[in-house]
Image (cartoon, rainbow, N blue to C red; front, side, top):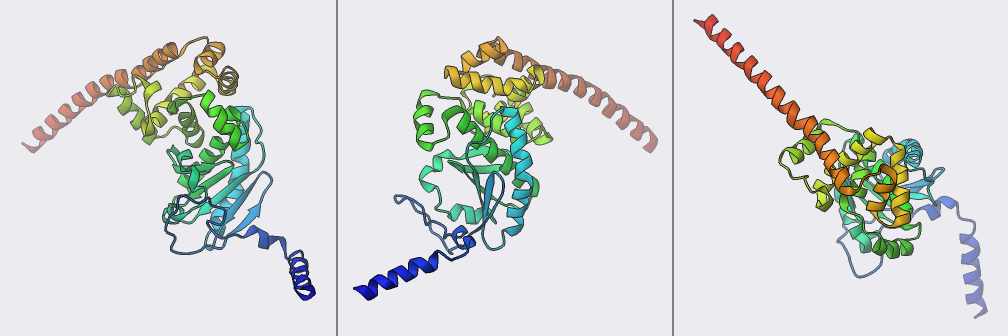
Length: 307
């Protein structure tokens, strides 16, 4: 018995002198809750790098991605904190996968898989303050995932509280449409580019976005991105933080819009739709008529020269 006690004491003493980096390593799935599972083809030995406000976790082959994340995330965090007028509570943990296939095998955070957030940079999974990233070979798309993850963590804290338990309770009291949060995350993660412009143009011209408050999925993301861009272009960036704050305090989007913009949701929707019609419908009619005339003249000139 005495010999057994001494052996245990020796093990405890030995582990107390191990370097801190050992504790930064863990096997994938170690902290998962049972009830759901995925087939994993290999165990991964994880390491992490610690930065001012976040940690980047990576495995073999992922050091460059972890370094890239660490180099860019601080500036992104400061920009988004300024836009939301809110400081991060706690630390963010970036869990980085070298490819999408590895991320799909992960058991970490699987029990809250419904927390996925779709955005134009990919699909970023958020569990508490953990942001799951994967690399597709495109650093621009990877950077969009980083910004989307930061935005989602901050928005969850602003609207629902910092603790996961608080978030679950408060989310039942404050129901937000998909365009509101996911559209804002998309706006923060991606600049207005030709892909977004074409998506929004298609939604406006086809009248798919007429009732954007009821949209879901990717349609809600792009429509919401456009609505937030319209609000910011019209009322300035300060409107974002004010809307978030008043929506949280009143637990109602309508009250937030009325207090900050002086308009209800129907009036905001009408003004946004008019702006989109002016941007797309009128410009398309004008452009089509010019292009058709130019095309006909060029064709006639070419035919004349051939004869």
